[in-house]
Length: 349
Image (cartoon, rainbow, N blue to C red; front, side, top):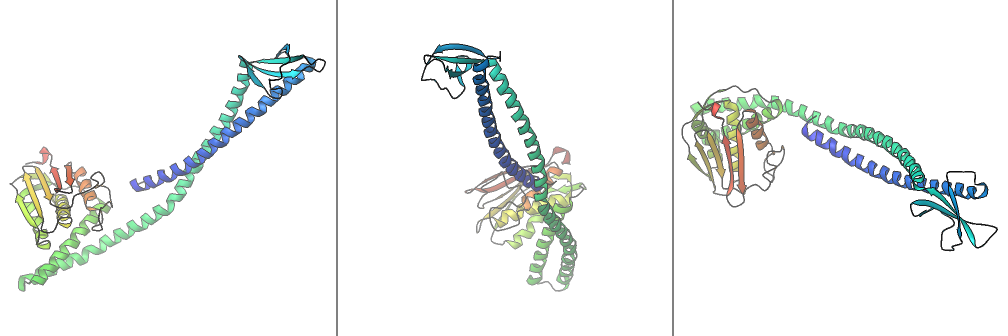
């Protein structure tokens, strides 16, 4: 079960289970209160019968002066015991005080409580099973829709590769004999689509790293060149130095592409993008609008504007985790965003 499926499942289960549990708890409480009242009425009725034959040795009896302030209709506490008060038909000046030891009364209440608790526990188990079944049933349409979406994505990725590759090969071939600005724009657009294709491929299929030597300085310049042409009004600042690492070239290119693309896409008008590397530490900074929720930027589909798909930084984080690259992000509305990549020393040549 995937992360978003788990989230949907637990939310559905939690809401449904909590609602039923609350309702069951209220019903159990009122049921216990009602049964307790019935038990006290039964005890009071036995006390009354006891005053006629005195055959029940569970109770104690005492004759006291008549007191019109006591309740002669209900069982009530009297000191450390439970008592019932009954008038003596043959005299108006005295009354019976029938006493039940509190330990005996408490034992009966405790037995009643255990009975209600057992019923409540059985109901909770039933509710839990029912909530689980309901949650799985409610999740089924979502899982089916996601399956169809993933199938569509898989087919789209497969079908997208061929025409994009064909466009790139043909534009390069034509550009050798008849170079033009229009062809260059077509090639840049095709490369942008190709970058999106590779992102979708990583997102759907994953990959197995194939490590080789990479010059960070050279790769930064090569990947930035595309965006320099796409965003001619932005200033690109390079503060780089040669540094060879051992990692997966395609994956590092994907990381750089996504970070540089974001730095350009969300920058201010006539802003700047700074690409810096000091040995095995790469920093890509912009003068853009900044990020409001830095804690959510790596979540898939999260975005703070209408631009983009919300996939870029999620893919970057996924690749960094696989390649053991430590990534940190700092952002504010005034200074823009700065993302730092720390490559492990083992990867440094």
